[in-house]
Length: 249
Ligand code: MF3
Ligand code: CO
Image (tube, rainbow, N blue to C red):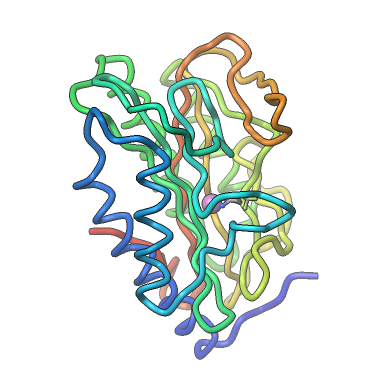
């Protein structure tokens, strides 16, 4: 069942979103060659707590950290480590903020120093995929319209869409209905209604879409070792169009 949110509830989620936005803005400045993803995780955890909120991922189904930090061929759910990021790496930081019981979820990929042209293209196209999906998030459209637009854009650019992880409804729980696929057919799936709140979070690979899961039971990485990127926003469906609750700019 999709839990429709009132404007008041959406406003509460937007408050959580504001903290998430501020945290990502700080990370943007912090992420440089030499920093470790464990340092990034500690910074984010402290930042969230000092704003009166909670890092919802910590302890979620046993996940041990405030953030997921996925480097290079890691697709998602990377564990923060003590290894320094190096010039040319890309890293995706994903986190969920809980403020007074209402959640906001956003992942962002960052370039570490100067990155290759291929990496730049991957980052650019993955972000475009997110915004192309958001454009389709209007009342009367169907979920498949979002899915299809994302897939077409990625594949037209010679990139591939990860199939195993999806966007999701969100509210007082991190994962609610519906699932939002990043590949699929137009004019299929649930029709979008005012008050739906969900994430769109395409994971796009430079090579094949296939993945493997690490021994830790969490971290997904590309089978072929190619780079993977991800951008994720939490958004609400409103009469005036999609309202992004985690927009950084
Ligand atoms: N933020 C993730 C998402 O976009 C969920 C992370 S899984 C967790 O759905 F266990 F780390 F929380
Ligand atoms: Co997320």
